[in-house]
Length: 76
Image 1: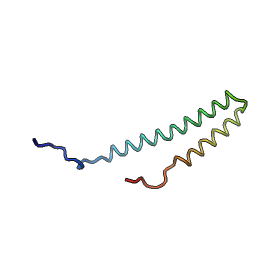
Image 2: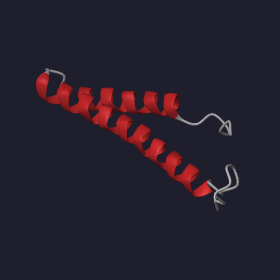
Image 3: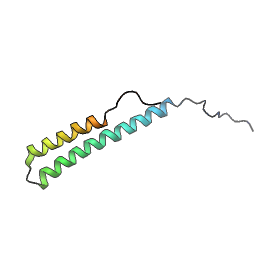
């Protein structure tokens, strides 16, 4: 039985770009959520206050940015 599908012949650039977009949004969204949660927990649940909590949230966001940023071209 003949088939129209030939393994390895299809263009997958759209799927690759969608995957990279999803991974990027999940990565940066998780960082933003973590920084926000740390800020809110420190502000409302400790005696740190607004400025101390904001400083810790910014430090977490900046440190996360440097850890999660891309380091050159992808391997494929």
